[in-house]
Length: 595
Image (cartoon, rainbow, N blue to C red; front, side, top):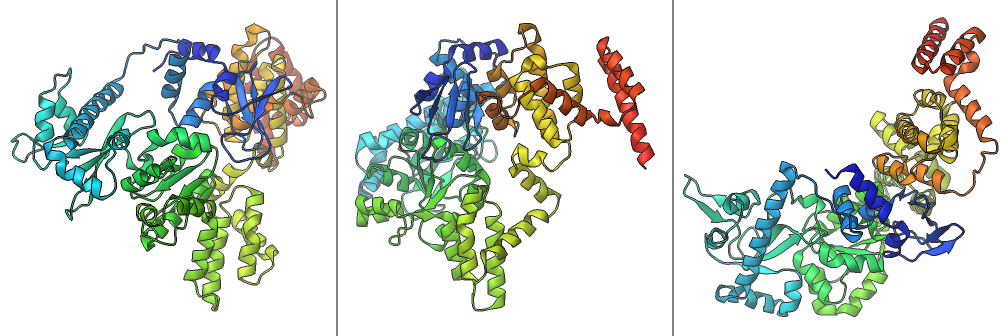
């Protein structure tokens, strides 16, 4: 746990303009800075940074936050990792007492580092000759290149690593740690330990920061399994890890695009050919964790899986994840060769470059396969095509993008586009509670508010107090407690707490601190936008609009004059809790009469 005062010091010292400028170009405009958003593709700048408020906001994709959340999203780091990174950069010393989990993780990092050193040293020793010959046969003999990925070798023996680790002095039990890391296993009957990786080429798997979190081993012959990965640990979660990410991230950020292949040798072959923005999902379809790890690249993700049926199925299984995360994805179709390694060896880098340029969207590939696998001459085939198409179209969050594909579906079935839109509308209105909750999450705050009579008033209240914090009062808090939207109520309470905390500083609000507390809120982006806009928009008379909003939310117009007078007197004397109780009793009485 990093102390709050240290977080405040980091935010105070770290210039958000300076930090953001290290990842993208910013141009001064008015009192702020603008640039092309690093989190989505665009041609016209919609990303804004306000140095005074220490926040950023994109009017295109609704992303917003402070300097720490920017580094978190751009580099895929956790909050503590991003805070420590900025602390080191700006000279903020962070000395926090580590928890047992953190200490255990450090131990695993250390034993993994020792193992990685052992495997690499073994590759260039006498026992490693067979592995070096294997690599040479596949076209990889450049030591510097192989070292950049930490490639090593586990010899054909049962206790090479065990003996190596026992010879290393450490402040922890290295063998116990190696067992926890999945490097060694206990012999049956309690006769010591043996190496888990044997007679295998070893690929260390690193996190974004370059720390070894696990290993992948490839057999040199026909031994099964061909690939053996570390078991899942507190460090290594296969569904969230991409091989080569630490090596590729600089290039990924530079070109604002990532290429995802299946295997270790595919990554090596792509990097050697100059496509250094390539990572591997290690034989699995893309998961939510994989996509989120690459989401900060600011551009599309290209899938480059094997051209066999398994590769196609893996690509199609990934479609739902990309749509859910609202990340553009294109599919590279090689049309020749089973995998990228084979394609490059046969066709060369220029052919690969052309294949990348010609890559179509994964959604287009989905429709191609849908038409190929359904008999469009039968009513059953048309129905299956239509149902699957509408299901995927309904997941697209951008209206313009959805409209791009609607005519294709309509033309495939000789329908008018309105028929497809009608089906999409029916799908959005139907479904169970879980589906409805999912769709509600896709609505903007304005769209969600318009569905309820008091919704617009709730939004107005938040906008007014964010722009005019000096108008905050206990009546505002009482109104927030009556918000009908749970997400909006939670965000409103956090806003109120920050405004209350700043009541002794002349009605100001720490925008950066507020967004930090809203890190998990779906309204974080909307609130960042409300704070960063230069003008008040529709708020012509803020005090009047605030009072009208409060009245509508609290439904005070329906209360008796005597009850209203009692509430006003209680609030005027500072007895806010009693005023709330009187209001609640009056509203319950009204509800009883209606029944």
